[in-house]
Image (tube, rainbow, N blue to C red):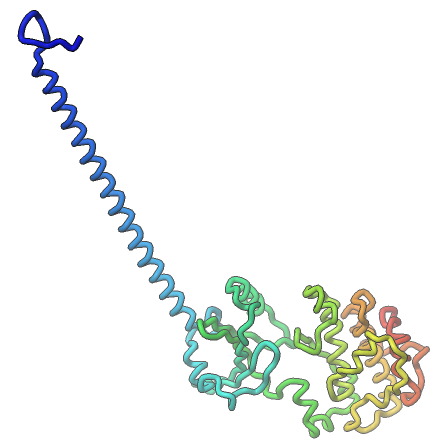
Amino acid sequence: MDLCGASYGLNSCDSDANKEEKTNKHLIMALLLGFGLFCFICLATGCMTVVYRRRKFAEVKSKSKSEDMFSIWNFEGKIAFQDIVDATECFDEKYCIGSGEYGSVFKAELEGGSVYAIKLLHSMEDYTDEKTFHAEIQVLTKVRHRCIVKLHGYCSHSKCKFLVYDLIERGSLASNLREEQFAKDIDWHTCSSWSTIFGWTCGYTAPELSSTMMFTEKCDVYSFGVVTMEVVMGKHPRDLLLSFFCRTEQRTKLKDILDQRIPEPTSAEEKDIILLLLVAFACLQVCPKSRPTMQQVYQALTNRSCPTAIQKPLHQVKLQDLHDFCSTIKNI
């Protein structure tokens, strides 16, 4: 086996050398081909990485630039972030017309004389999720009601977020009630025929929100009750709300909590005031299920039918009476 030579029919020994040479050549070619393929893959990967990074940079740059513009704006996008900054001198305090738990409101007069209320949002965890923020804003821009301030648009900027509303010149309810002349101009007839739509603001939210963080129809009912009390009393009810939680007997007379800046109500107005406060007490009950619906509230105020059990002179009505009979509002 493996014998080679030049005679006797043996294979030439040179053929093995040729075979070995050919094998070596094939191996070298395979190595070169493999190395070339490896280089090609590396080059392709590098090119793809560069292209991806360039596209990513362009997207980030474009997004950063777009953040300086209003994402939703009813005036064909002609107003940009810088216009608001210039109008408020970078949100200077002298343009601030109000502040709350989640933001401050600034008055901005733009070129052409248009005036808007700009609500600059504080830095909050609730608004770090851009998708959630944008979804909520899109809903607000589609909602229209005569009692809801119109939202024109918003700006989602890298440094701040703000909302653009119509400016309500007369300000907030609380600020107006603090004005002596304004309080005197409102009589009891005006208070008894008043109604409003209210949003989530600290001091007006239903107690169950602190534990459930779930908005329901009954949360709005509670807020309506707080604002109703504020209008009648001329100030936020604050400590008076504790009586709903402590369930202690309330011997305070109803007439003693009324806004003393307004002349005493007439006999005809007394009945409406009692009914209005009875509705407010019904809305402020701790148990959400015990509160009436807004339809029932509307029906009670429209019918102006006060329960017989509480129909007595104003100076004889105690707050405890309102507690005891507020559940009758559902049946009016």
